[in-house]
Amino acid sequence: MKPFSSVVVITYWLSLSFYARAQVTTGSQKLAAFSKQKSMIQQSPYKTLKWRLIGPDNRSGRCVDVAGVTGNPNIMYAAFATGGLWKTEDVGVSWKPLFDQQATLSIGSIALAPSNPDVIYVGTGEANIFRASLPGIGVYRSSDGGKTFRHTGLQNTGTIARIVVHPKDPNIVYVAASGNEWSYNKDRGIYFSKDGGKTWKNILFVNEKTGCIDLVMDPSDPNTLFASMWNRIRRRWSDPVPEDGDHIYKTNDGGKNWKIINNGLPDTKYTGRIGIAVSHSNPNVVYAFVDDHEKKRDPRPGETDSYERQK
Image: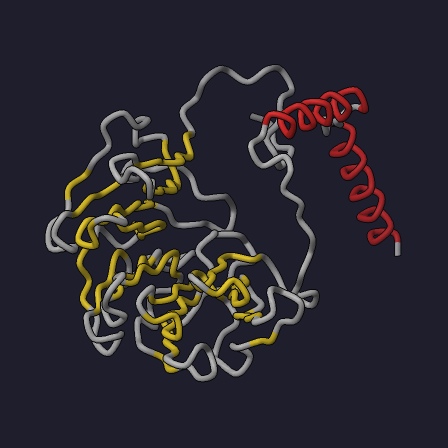
């Protein structure tokens, strides 16, 4: 029993040493942050907006995507990282699961066809690259508002970050495949289907560790799309680290040709995930939310990262 006791004592001492080094947020810092939050709320254009939890109250994991039906505010869909797909038809008073009988409950993205909201595409496999993220098995399609689904392929894509459907043709669909979280694979990039998912074509591929993490369509021109490519593989011993190759691409011909548009963005040697959005009121305005890892200063003595590791 002595060796066991020694291990317990050493483990306990190490845990105390770890917490002793941890930087604790003081009460003054918390109050200052709360004061700043109140000030920001007062300046927000949404300060009068009131939120309440409307469910589903037995959800599992993170909510990764939501979608509503234009012209019918009663209907909304909510997708979860490990909890499948849910639907409400009474503005959130009650919810019902739609995906419990499918082969996976890990969802990455959902999209409704603007021309026919009964057509739903579900991309499986959460693309947020958490340690608890689960891979998916490709794309599903429903043609009856979620009553039934059929698997439409791309089962080796690992994770799917975004799905975009043509505004006038529900059979034309683009899929942003971000690939396996932990390993290399060829089934990454952007896939295109013109027959509702019966067949797919990869229209943008970079390499076996670079996937598409975001994809948006110009609301005034369905042939113009913007794609964000993320070069990353997660290792068991670390988070994804910045590697050169995180670019924004643009096409003006529906994906036949792509060009990199990085002018004005941080050095791609230090960037990570990039989120993109196009303004509906002025499609010439494109927003990019860039994960920038460029070193701005040297760490202070004893400074740690969010995992309490010395910098």
